[in-house]
Length: 221
View 1 (cartoon, one colour):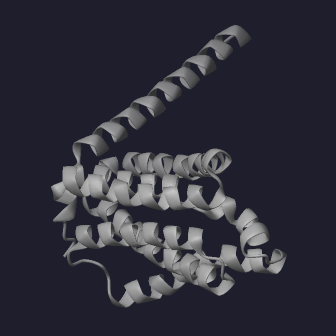
View 2: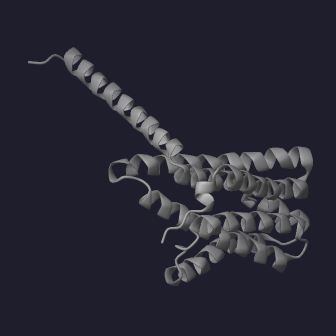
View 3: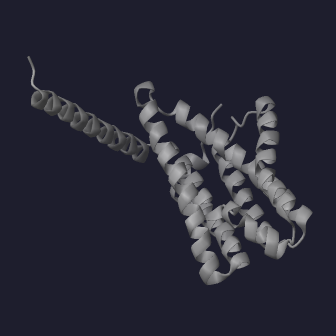
């Protein structure tokens, strides 16, 4: 019979082996992404757009101090990006972005950044709501194209690992983006911090356009 000590040793060995396998798979996924200009460009573009351009964390302050609306207004503002994303989803079902996809991706992220800049300086509730709706609309274009690139440019045996890397990119940038918004609002002020985020989104688009011509010329047709 196997003693309790031996069982515990076997369990610990299995756990340690599993952990090594997980980390090695993550490293393999990251390595594959860094060697693929299509994937690296699309992931980096979306990650930095979310990191710098998101204004969701600041919406309660905008609602109360800038737009002077109550909880109902704040709820509507938070729903606007999702409404825009749903509208764009129906459009993309009929008109998928398979022609000049890389250029469309870059333009969509640029438009997202411009929406954030416009939102930062808007003092009118309905204009702010419209800009947030448009930001969700353009962000959905980015999400669809990035997801399609992931599926088409990743071998089947690597798809899970690359999808995990993508989740890490986007999941961490959401949290870090909220942190960045709070820090910049503390030192720059509310409106300048959101405008700065939109400007940085445009800077990132310009940089990726320059250093990654493969993404700019990408077509998913």
